Image (cartoon, rainbow, N blue to C red; front, side, top):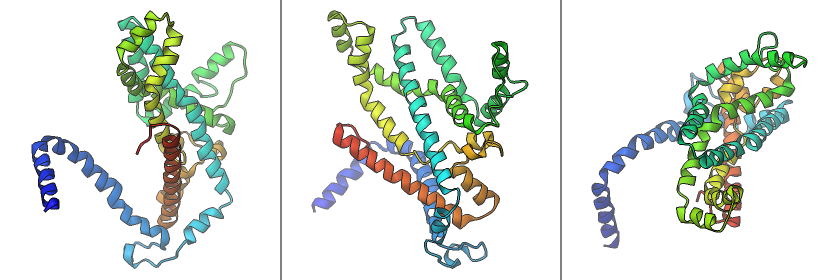
Length: 307
């Protein structure tokens, strides 16, 4: 009886707010169709997949493909490139949107604020292909703008795109240029939600701008920062595949080859579907475990977590 009453209440609630459920339906359908349904194909990570036999008819091989990946001579190079690239991006790219949002929030001139926002947001809308082409042109050793400026100040020209030592720096700072402004949107929204009475009280107490930022703004957006940090940590073994592939060449591949580009070469180009599915599953499990651990640590240390 209680179950029937509970079900009736839920159905009445759905019928009462059906417009909201209709709005969420496309997003829910997208997630189910493109994220959950393809999980059926994960079984080929444990099979020797053949197109003629299909998913069900292909023979089981157990952990053969995982063992092959772990025994790969370049296994640790792939892992280290992926992790170091993400750590570099985290150290440089994560704080900059926060700093930019705080600076924009402190600007009093509305026209100046809007101009800065427009200039910093604009690169986000440039496609990855176009952005990669711009980076290659800007950093060209003979005709690139950056090397031209280096030559003007008396420095030696640098072949950025052929030197493995420069790849991670080029990737990370070009990402900052493209996405830092867009990332400030969330932090500006969080700053707008801070109680104005706290700001007025700080002014009455004689706090300067730095003190206001340190004692009011940063604590106010700390939960938002932590949530985004947890999400970033959950992608520590994933990288921006498209831009890496477009910037990659045979001269910098030692520093630019990550798990996703390796999977692309062997999976899409060579057709080794079972092997690359196993690698993708291994990568996803690592990200999932890291997300669980970081979220659990954040929940233990603070009151903020994803769940």
